[in-house]
Image 1 (tube, rainbow, N blue to C red):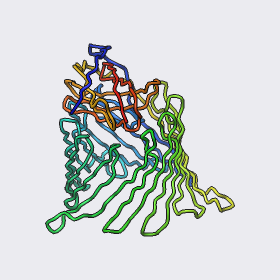
Image 2 (cartoon, rainbow, N blue to C red):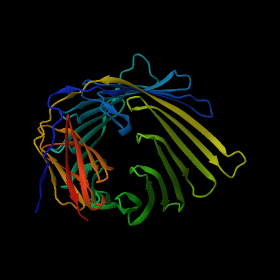
Image 3 (tube, rainbow, N blue to C red):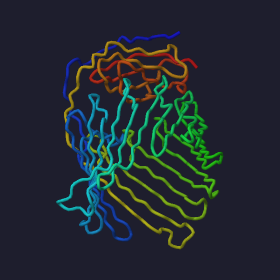
Image 4 (tube, rainbow, N blue to C red):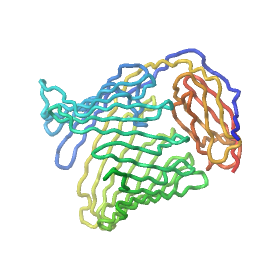
Length: 425
């Protein structure tokens, strides 16, 4: 039996409004290495709508036109790339055209189309079809790829079928935490699908439902190709602070180790990330890659500084190579129109919940939602960002929260709603 819990909620704003936000318009990266080369990369972004912006921290940039200038050495040699997009009414990417200018660059060059993609979505805003055309430098079509995507009732991707160089199909399954636990890849051969490779994921969770260990095994043609083991640690806010990873490859029998560390400021913004790489096991060679982040007054990434060092810890002079780069972001303000979302009701079910709750919003148009869940002590235990539609419910795992009453706060477009639900383990 399905239980529905309908909130009695407070609407804070009822009219359309304009809220100033910031979006990236240029990224400049300058770096240098031990051999004296100074590469300079520039990335330019253009927008045709005030309702489309960017979030560098989430790696989301809804640009209409993107240009990449890559300079080397004396800055006279320039490689230039361009990408143009169109969008549907829900600001989802509909088409992408990627072009490359002839090299070396001069004022008479005309961009040559390299790839053209078309994307389609279902009523739940999930990608259901993607077609890509690839072209040679003289404009001849060289390849077509087509992919079809299927989902289960929890909105998890379960099947991908398509054509690349040959017909292929993949199947995926998930555990009760919503994480993938297995996948299979098939190729069409001699009139039937033949299994090419399998992936399995053995996951271990702590009492908060956080993934702490994972073993990922890839098998090809009945032969184990690689096994990846990864361990995770989190801080009290649920943010990752340490990861370790090791890969074992069958073809050489040597392990490849990685150690990751993450540091945050008081705003829970990532300010330092590092990875230590031991590519051939314990043989004295290692590489360290450190990135530090600075933020603007409006809490967007302002600058990234990256230093990569290679070591031989058994040598007299351990540092072999050092590369560094600085990436600077430039922003412009924009004022997206916030339209009344007319949220008629919010249903959360089942009540009580055990492994997951579903949030269903009755909205008249696709709307961005920020969902916050707090425990009885007022501590935030879950934060989600997703797009709500009238036909779809959002699944929220709660199996790791423990029994009790939880407070739910939803920012739906220009409205704030709140209520409570119960978890029984």
